[in-house]
Length: 395
Image 1: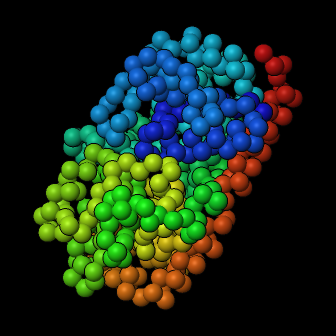
Image 2: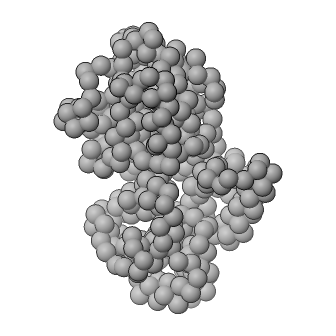
Image 3: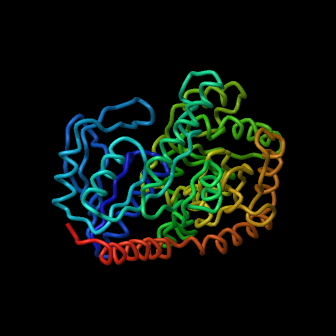
């Protein structure tokens, strides 16, 4: 098959949608499918390049100074996109968003009678917190954003989302079509307890103390301030270290929080972590913590589970699909800082409990093997291609 992936965000962007699109392209390519990715360029010009063996066409883009994110030109690109799509001649087009040039790509696909599938990674909460607006205005923008989503995704042939929670959310906003729940998947050969991260202990000057880890974007909806406050409380009872890995708009504020609580020496901010270092960093940790309230699945949590870590997670959105309270970790209510501190203490001070939860994480993550996820996407692609071959004369 020849699959065109159209995405508003791609490596080296740091977010779940970019990571999913990158891995989907890589694994489809490994399975000998033809793959082309259309994404924002990394400069203010159009560019063609290869990323880990995958062909990428970058549309001229402009920096927005948030997490190194870039927004691609969306006006006057239809002719260019049409040319690229015709040259590649895909059997199916997979949209990763309803934003910007994704809509243009959809219109071209309709004109050329090319099957369309879309995966929803979108939640307004991931964007609205950047806007310095009153609650009423944010509520209006949230509704407008979902209406734009509905306008595009209702025209697609197949729609997927990573979890049942994501499917339910789309139904609640008025999306009437069937939604397929397909896990983002995790490569258990890359993320596993056999990795060795000892060299990272030296790279980041980490002590031999027990470590808790957060890895992901450092943005407001991730509620990392709450985790730092809980860690400060836990430090009164145990000797430990907190590793906060990733980049984001809140990094300076988070460092100030650690300084205000007089625990700066017990918190390490690593900055951006490469794909090479990431699997090894998990194995240094004794526990993974996450407090994001807008997780449609959380690839980072799955990576931590595959690395054999107990998880302490906020009881919100799709995280309870991955974390079973008292089994492979603990769930807490948002803002319940004392409970987070208590759970950190329990896990780091009880080796038997930590080992038990570690084994449960390893058992539970098996159902998210990326090979199964890629097979499901291949099946959806083929079903669409077969349907179109029966319905249309190929252009």
